[in-house]
Length: 481
Image (cartoon, rainbow, N blue to C red):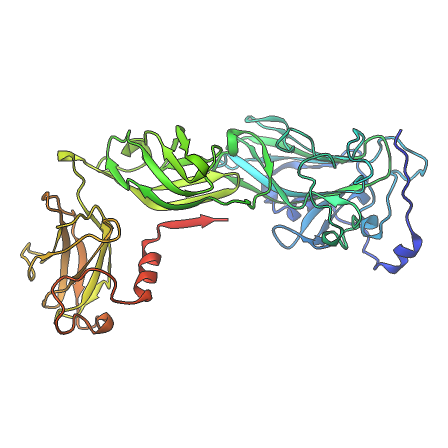
């Protein structure tokens, strides 16, 4: 039998500031967890639970609510005694060592139509550490789900262990990190995240429980916050719990190739760091399931990408995003791959941006034409609205891996033209990219072409500002932390 060897210290209790008595109604826990009250069906259930064992708090010591301003707090004892280092034998008989300290907090919730998963954050604290590590008689935190997608307990570590002091997630044990929690000489999980599956449009039940095992003291507590729904399925399509701040985040350097035929089926390789087999990859709107991780995690091969229509483009093709998801980590490569009609076994060039976007009619402004599929020997032409050539066709060299060329604007009357890039194979960018000649245009960077400069320039002449603007304009990498 597990016996209590810990005693509350009245002197310590007197020295610590007093707290307001727990007074939150069960419905207040819903708001504290950031749940829309309109989604709750039939109210909140707290069977056999004393009102002194739950409350709404903004923080517990240094641990603030994950989604301010508040989080729900459940305890196997009186929540007002936590920071006063006093354990509590519910219902307070003193000699009762049965497993009587049990909090149950549950509700039915209507799942939004778009949702394929939901997530929440929790932080579990226990005075069972370190005295009862390795014992089966430890306070336990559980969350039970009844959904069309999953039925059962959904919080456990990577080894399938429930949340106790024996759990692999129970890692915050440095007293300096726990000052003011009431578990200063004990331990906690820190904030972790659970993601579980659900079915859009259903009404599911979630029940949170925390309870003593084989004793009525040695209390534990849990903060719960930030319950959210998402379109994205959970990792592995089942319940997942872990730290949502990756120790080694995914970083993508570049994609090769960046374009391909409408029918798909070709391999695409991502180069970077920290690729792992548990990454989920979406190519446009289609998931790629056949993945190969390179040695050391420095590459990820997508074996056989989907066709253009499956990826979400129209029949003529176009650009798609590549999205990588691992746990709550998500990396999006915007317009990272482009589908084209591959007639003749070649891919036409495509212009995606021009900087600056306008020039003075007097000509001589250096502009950067950026896109995909540019090859050495390509030409750039300025075409009037009636199809006539404006100025000379300029021969250029491809730079930055076939993504950017630099040319000088011709002399031209005010008005709009189209910029067309043509590769030596005869394939041209279509449609042309709009460009404006106007007296309101900004002065050419670094004074324009200047004496002695040819009609075609390659390389950077605008300093680091050019590079920064190009990187921002490209918008190729967006990361959600």
